[in-house]
Length: 173
Image 1 (tube, helix red, strand yellow):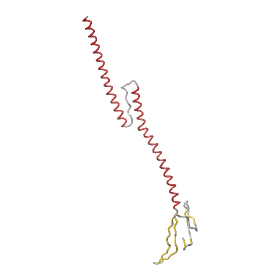
Image 2 (tube, helix red, strand yellow; image 1 turned 180 degrees about the horizontal axis):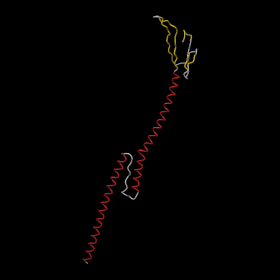
Image 3 (tube, helix red, strand yellow; image 1 turned 60 degrees about the horizontal axis):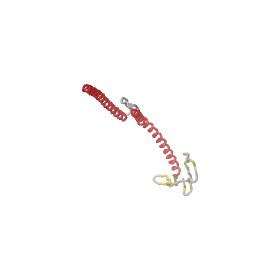
Image 4 (cartoon, helix red, strand yellow; image 1 turned 30 degrees about the horizontal axis):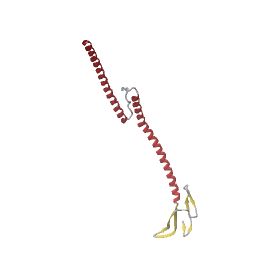
C-alpha cells in the first residue's frame, strides 16, 4: 500500500507460503495497481493505491518442477506398461508358438510317426493352426495307409503272377 511514491505497508508471500511484512518493493516480473477509495454516501474518497507484484520466475520454477515430476511419472508408467505387455505377449503368443514349433520339429526329425499330433493351445488362433495341421496329418496318414495297402495287394498279386509264370514255365519244359 502506498501513499503517492511512499510505500506505507507491504507484505510478501514467501516460497513456502508464509506472509512476510516488507517495506521495500518486491522483485517482480509484472504488477497491477488499483486505487483505494472509500464510499461516503454517494461520494468516493481516494485513500491511496494498492499494487500487486507477481513474480513469474517463481511460477516458472514451480511449473518446471511439476513438469519434471510428471515426465518422470510418465516414463516410469511407460516402462511398467512395456514390461507387462512383453510378459503378456510372451505368455499368450510366444510360448504357445514355441510349443507348436517344438512339436513340429519332433514330428519332422523323429521317425516320421504320423500318429503324433500337435497339442492344443490355450488360444483360439493357435488351436485353428493346430487343428488344421492335425487334420492334414490324419489325411496324410490315411493316404499312406491306402498306398501301403495297395502296395501289399500289388505285391501279393505280383507274387501270384510270378508263381503262375513259374508254374507255367515248368509245365512247358
